[in-house]
Image (tube, rainbow, N blue to C red):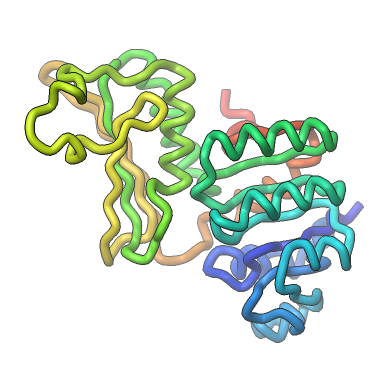
Length: 268
């Protein structure tokens, strides 16, 4: 059975790489794409790949109404993502979320909608295997080391802070325990904001500068020793492609919301 996919954000940096990877596959096919700036064209014309014959729509709602799909892949922007996901669930599609910037409260609402619809939603802050491993290693370390801080790096044009990768990391660590602060934030002297933001029990610092794509670093500290775990993205979207295809194939195997690519992998 071929999995029919609607890809929102199909002409973007990551979405276009996923679209090109789907083109030669037999078990996954694109039936529609979403891109406001290229609406009315075929995706193949936009990406110069004649194998991609699906139409491009201005909104997810238009695409979902025109062409039924099995999986809706959300790869747009935070201000549109939740609305797109809820619309897809209402249309009976499973959903993969690749967009960063959604808050835990957004995921709570999405989880409830997924359960009601009887569909699966797989939210992945970063599809790269190295990120999956960073998250797992950090979870292990947090069980033994009570103090850590997270640094989030991205290019200067990235508006959401922190990144979805770091939001997911902080969320996962909160399930283990909050990080300990030797000096409580309220006792900090000087400018308290320089200590970063407290997110679900972790101190998070976001850097936005030219020269970065997406990087995430977590530093664990103990007396006379420290552990640093870091992921760095390169300039291409290729590391995200294999994870994206895996997510498309796996999202229909469960009901409700799962967060992280590892939730559908056997990493034990």
